[in-house]
Image (cartoon, rainbow over all chains, first blue to last red):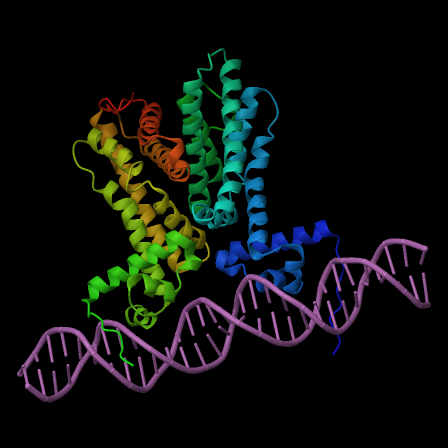
Length: 209
Length: 209
DNA sequence: GGCGTAGTTGTTCAAGCGTATAATAACATC
DNA sequence: GATGTTATTATACGCTTGAACAACTACGCC
């Protein structure tokens, strides 16, 4: 009985592949679909190998959640340019591919549903979430200051909460109802709405139709 | 070996209890925690009984999802009063108990994560979601008309999308980060923001601090 | 007050789960 | 090319799962 041949992959690559396979399983069949056997099949290895890299199934799920959060937030947190440009980019990035698509939503919702139950996931969640909102709040402060407005802390906080909510909600709508909107439509609505909230133009160049 | 004694409940009551037990299981341990045995234990019956009322586990989960959606939307869809009062109530209801709490979010997210995978759940979702947004859109049209503004359909649609997004997002923030806000704070931010979006006061009576 | 019905129980079954561990083969090193 | 290390496979174990089904009993009915 010959064993199947295999390839010894470097640790980093193997871990990455396993996590990617995990995300595929979750996106396709939910957390319940992410069994060690299914993950292994997808990654093209046998089930036992997962325990060689992750102490338990819990651990690989936690790592996978970190990756999900990172992909949802990292692009928006690295915008460049002047304050106005950065704010605009932040908005657009969060409402277009690859951040906004149904797979992202499936993954996000799968983990969110367990955040209030699983303390480990809750910790990972809080970390990523605060980072995101702080990035937005400082973006707003910079923008207001650049426009010569006093950056009243209370107002900044309220604005950040509102805009964060608006972006979350529109992202949700776009991911869920995808085909009901053009990408441009949600971005356009977001820009117009946020201009109304702040009371200043964000100067979207020929984006608002 | 004597069997345990039992009570023959009327169908409606028994089905209700079983669904309630299902929701408890999901809220506490996610969809994975909703096994026929756990549901049965919570409902105080044996596992076999579930299959007497529901053709399969899938069916009881679908019924449970219908209940979740109904509880999230029914109160807001039944607001009364003049247009301004109805709009204000709609906003407040969606951001306070019992619609906004962490259990609601857990249940919602659990099902949402499978909507893009399970066609049956997707159908149930679309039904409830469109009802909610239509309710908001007609509320807006009434409000604008009552204020003497022309209810331009395109603007109504964009406004409904934006406000729906804002409410969803703030609901999410409130449910997830609950302790970071006072209930009043999110409601207050929502009212102020929506006034800015519409460009009209909603006349919140002494609610905005 | 006995009977029939069907709501409910208890048990069983195959499948699939996470985990543990021994055997094996790929690769680095010399 | 032999050797040592360890990534990887293969197999096994104990447990839980959704489902099926026969036996039992509560309760409406006449």
